[in-house]
Amino acid sequence: MIYELQKDQFMNCKHLLQKERHIEVQAIIEGNNSGRIFVDNASEPRSGLVWLGNLDGFVFIGEANNKMFNLEIKKVLREQIAQEAACLDLKWFEGFGHQVGWDRTIREILCEQSYEESNQKVYKLYESAYKTYNEPIIDEVYTVLKVTKENLVTYSLLKQSFFVSQITSFWNSVESFFEKGIGYVILHEDQVVSLCFSGFVSGNMHAVNIETILEHRGKNLAKKVAHIFVQECFKQGYVPYWDCMEVNKPSIAVAEGLGFTNIFDYIVYEYQF
Image 1 (tube, rainbow, N blue to C red):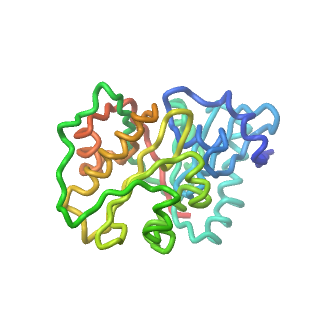
Image 2 (image 1 turned 120 degrees about the vertical axis):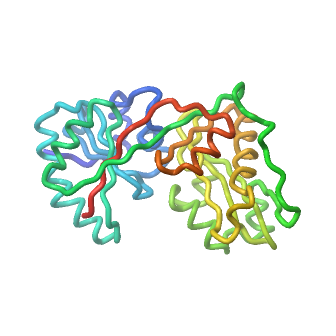
């Protein structure tokens, strides 16, 4: 049988985490970011499935060779999660294993699905490796602004759909973001056109999330706001963490241009619900 944990039970999964792996899972178990967790045993879980709160994926954690869990979670994916995904207008399952040993098991769980595999790369940036000399100069029509409660009001950021949608795709609200995260935006005529902020937070690690409006791309805005963001991380003693698709060459170029080091890769499995 599979049990869905209540939020006050999430820490029961702490022992299933692996150091130096996915910050997203750690952030949810620690209660920093929203998410749901399905396990084989509520009090002493051996294996689990974490549904990221931003609907951006499912993460298998713990023992990969737990036959009972693997059989039952297959049913949960097919009978419960697929229905809930339809109600949420979520078209695709995207999953991966927190531990390396899950890859073979995930392929077995998804054997009845027509799934595809892709590669992801994870980076960290240490202050000693930061390439300050690569920070670009941007056009004077743009203004870099720290996301603070005062600036929310001064620049009416809460009325700007691009800004709000980006923050709330990772956090329950802008208010919850302020409790743990940091962020910067770039304004053009008082409108947010690019931003970089903490998508997930675990301990002193902050997952970098960057987005730039289409018509303002190609102007070094993503690079600029990323530099300002990581500088703030270092001021506060945080370690920036970067996760991107292997085929996303522009994202990799920005990360490596900042000095990020590739610490591990993993496989993502996806199929249409």
